Image (tube, rainbow, N blue to C red; front, top):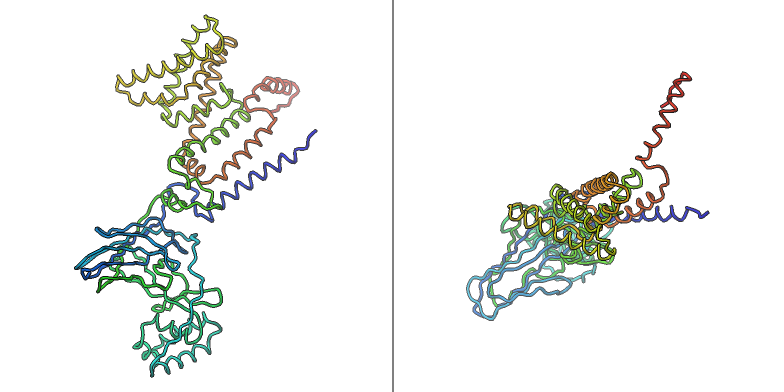
Length: 513
């Protein structure tokens, strides 16, 4: 006798791998367990304004990309008459407009949709910036040295030095007030850190707030300690990434490079909106990754196809359970699954009515063919043609009567219907109409249960977004296939035995259930 251990090991492996894949999709890629959830999307518009001088104009605007906390969804630009290109430069992306001749006030627009995504992985640059020593005039140089000395005494490394410097610059001392007249907080902090041989550079971020217009960028300082870095907001003294702060320019490049114009400025307008999670995920997974196995990487047509295909294992699981555990007889093993798929296209009531009409009419016509003693292939072919004729006839009748819903019976699988009619006809001849009603009714009942399971919005969401579920279904089907006990409907066979046992027990003065 073969050992069953390998079988149970395979089943356990399928279940665990499938469950692990589902957990990975939820916790790593933030795919929700239930449909209907929405994601926060920030639509941000950058407006570039300048005065053109009647010469060729070239404007280059730094633009954001996916970064910790945010995933880029869409980007577009509006610039009538201008040529536009998105280029990669100095490790970042830029939008470049160009025109041969322009004069007077000019307005260029760039719009980007960023999804709030705590699982976004793209890191900021870890390239350590060069330390630049600059000549500082007196008395600012002396003030810098005194502040640096006080901060260094309370610091242990570059990061803690930056934090202590921010405290010193905000304590309203004479040195702090003097240095505030020399430079704005961010360049001042960078210059003082470079003076202490600590690598640091300037970043520019955008504080997100719903409905804000003409919002400027916020200066930030990125301070390095070895290969690690930390971001400081010199204006508020906050340390670390802020939840609603989008890094707009993070490569120490100018936000706007303009040739052929003057009096330029960039302002930002933003609104917050929410989109269904499926739309957001489709955008997020648009770029395939080897570890991110997702159907969202496929073209839309294939995605729609797989949405239906991935429901079949759910229908199969329903059939296996109802046949093996409950003991419901069906006409054909998996014919109910195909009928359930047709019900999804037609709706349940229309599908049931159409199925009964087609099969009932087919059985009547098939009874005539049985008297002709045709060969099997010819008889099946005749039944197929007959089914097509029945579907066509009832579709025309439904259209003439204005019952457009009835035309959906064309979604039924014709070959399967033909085989169903053939099997039921043979069953009628061999075992009588009672068995036909039993198997036909069983098939319809299983098809309805499978339809209810497959048509569930939750099931549709999970089967499409969590491919690991297919492995779990496989494991459950294998376990059900290993079942060798009685089916629930078979237990009635033992009822006479139980009644007889109870009768004998009463005779003996006892009663058993």
